[in-house]
Image (cartoon, rainbow, N blue to C red; front, side, top):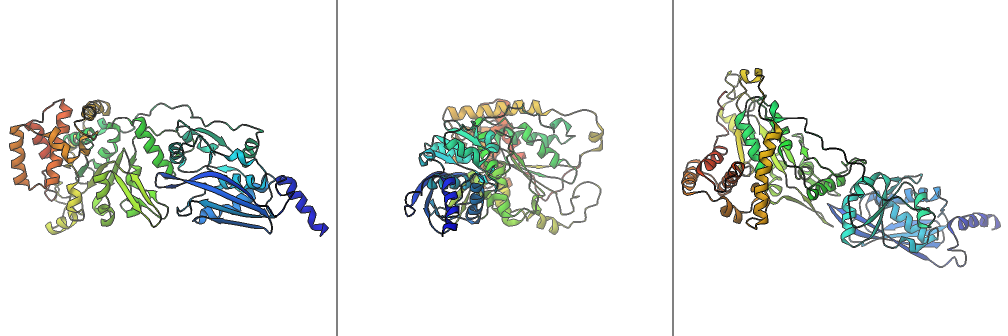
Length: 538
């Protein structure tokens, strides 16, 4: 028996005197943490009950595999700082038990609560602090995804202090109204909780100047109609469909669209940063995301990859493109189910993912740009006679993209083959900076309508139906022109609203308060071409 008492004395010396007087008395400590469901941070109370007894470490509270595995990481990390729990019976409860806990971010909170329960640190030192961080076996605190969303949620719950990994400092410093300190190892945390040292505050790195877009619109040869369509799409946040043969410039144009959009506001930048953080795409040294996102998923992307989902719901491409551009090249080659899943985010600007224990909501207000060939081989109408596709094959090819989805796209434009003279010309087109200036002026007019309470949405492309007639109502001549187009082109009610929205944007680009006939005519022309028709060579 005496031979067995020596390890017990060593354990008591390393963890304090919590169990020295009465081995049967259990000690309870609590720490705060959070779990993410979508972009929403749900508070989690980490309760630890510790008592002397046979080695035992149980974790309960609807925890997934990565959370359950924290027992191994926490025990190893604690041993590195001299807190040995081999003679302790530890029960960890993650409350509330009806919310599924995912990820490895509970390690730091569990370790802190265990140390409080066994007397290694004062239990009172844990009060009112949000702990978030993953532990390595040697006690290093690893970075987490979603720190920004967790801190925003903590601030909304009136939590005043938080401790997060050093590597998340730039992201954590973006949140005002909460004291955020960073930690690099469990040993540093122990010293801070014992009052022996202070942890550094989270600070943002020096801001780098905004990089100019590498792709400039001046590099695009020819295609004046498509360039104009791109400007209208940027000015009013209108979805765009481009149809043309290979080499017509569809991808080149799409990649230049983010440079035409106004800079992100601070609120928009926070939303974009939070989404990319949750997705694990935010680098450790990067603070606020200032550039407009541009996402171009491959046509083999799944429905979950495009709109989001999974066991622990992650944002999809539509959310990663929030406040930016989602480019679907060769849209006819995408899976039908994935394309049809775009309907809700295009209409509502959000993606809702329902699971058994929770519902995740991701923002998804993006500018959709689609590109496709005029036929399966791509050479229909190029003037060379290379295309051998029958009319039935062409119709079947275009039928891969459903009518309801195409109806939700505001601007349709056909790109003819680029003429050799345009390719060889040394003259440059209008630069991105010049076009963006007009776009920003048009966007300013749209924001003014929101301030005057004329509309409730900041862009013409997102206007509610009740606002469209109020601000996009054309003059009598424009009404007559629109009526003729409705009967001749068999436009749906949705397409009618799209034409009115685009007409309003064209008027805004001119600085006109009224929607005139030539505005309506141009908007109709951007909706009127037959997808199965052969584009004229230019």
